[in-house]
Length: 214
View 1: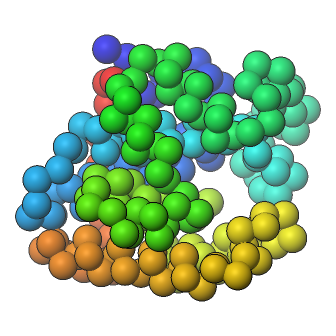
View 2 (view 1 turned 180 degrees about the vertical axis):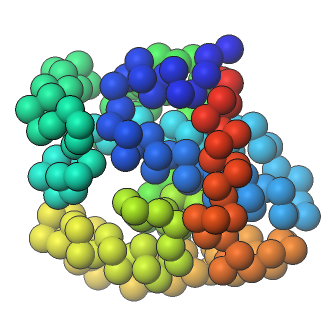
């Protein structure tokens, strides 16, 4: 068993990236504790804590300069270059490779493989509630904390404008609608509402998750 905080240090994750994964797992855990259908909580939390392990590769280091302190841009550029050399330039493939290095199950790999806006409709059309929770939880967390789905999508459009073709795809609106349908389905089985999930509501979960063992 390995502590997730130790794993983040071993892979030299930027604190902001580690915090993002912890917040996503916190959102997922709050949902798991409120939902009235059976789900594999361990798999959901593990996938949420690891779903962006390769994202050092795609990090735009100059976008949030405050996230680079105290080490600074030069240090994090060196770490990013190390990721390029070891894992290549595809952050998703890198994440899956890292998760395999960590010895995670095929189920966890499958959940991680389904995270992301691009998978929204495929996930919505399926019957995998665990995959829906992982996908949805990621789309509730912006760089600075927990937000609504609408706020998260708007923030993503601004941050990735001109850089990701999926933002301009003909089916963007369809994918956006699928996310809201996933939200509706999840909370039809929950004793809480989407607005009940926020930075304050997940803070206790995040603290506990820092010591989560894989």
